[in-house]
Amino acid sequence: MKPDVLLIGPFFEPKQRELENLYTCHRYWQAPDKPAMLASLVDRCEVIVTSGGRGVEVEIMQVLPRLKLVACFAVGVDAVDVEWCRAHGVAVSNTPEVLTEDVADMALALLLATVRRIPFGDRFVRDGRWLQGAMPLTSSLQGKRIGILGLGRIGGAIARRCVGFNTEIGYHDPRRNDGVDYAFFDDPVRLATWADVLIAACPGGSATQGVVSREVLTALGSQGVFVNIARGSVVDQEALVELLSSGALGRAGLDVFNDEPRVPAALIALENVVLQPHQASATVPTRTAMGQIVLDNVAAYFAGKPLVTPV
Ligand code: GLV
Image (cartoon, rainbow, N blue to C red; front, side):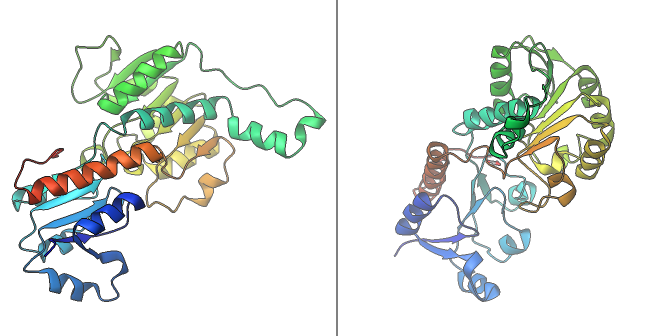
């Protein structure tokens, strides 16, 4: 008998298939009668697998008294109530490190695309507008001050790349990092006041909810650029749209949003933003590696071994 796994939502298909070959997986998102599916698993389901965006509600975990592991296909576990899990003896695992470099690449891709107006230039050529005259000049990244919000693994990888682009680096993080010589700011508003570009690279969740506030975005200013590869929740999205629309904030490159995949029409209508559909870790090699970590954590749990990447 293969052990049961409750699969809350789909993830990288080849690795999901491997999981489904190894265990009796129950596809929650496809269940016509979800309460009946949960009821059938009450006395036997010890493992939930879910994606970062989907997470899992406490209401689901609550009805599975034998639950011992929530394995997430993501580095960010803000869609899982980790405190609840801790209090109820449920371990949580994530997929750190393997995605760091791809996510940092996306931050730089969005930054350059935003500052140098790459999507605009692409449309300019395709629409035949070049035949009528040259595209307007853009601003430059050279010599700019880059403020990184959250100097963890991903923030650090972004900073290393920014050095190669001849920029100056500052950061705000709950912990000052004495191992780097980037300028430290003890407050996000002070960081944004100093910076030409602000890149959000902190975890999501209640601790960082709205940390990129109206005040922070206003401090960044009319020539400022905001890049978000973290979570939509870290920014006051309403203020972001308003300030970008009025010109009080210069530009933005955004991979993440509140309430994905819904993106406000007002944001889509703006010319001074570059948008991505939460693609930062979405490469075949990285998603393969993330999927393998999910499989390794589930296997470790059923083998009675320590998890590979516990949160
Ligand atoms: C993606 O957003 C992740 O948390 O891995």
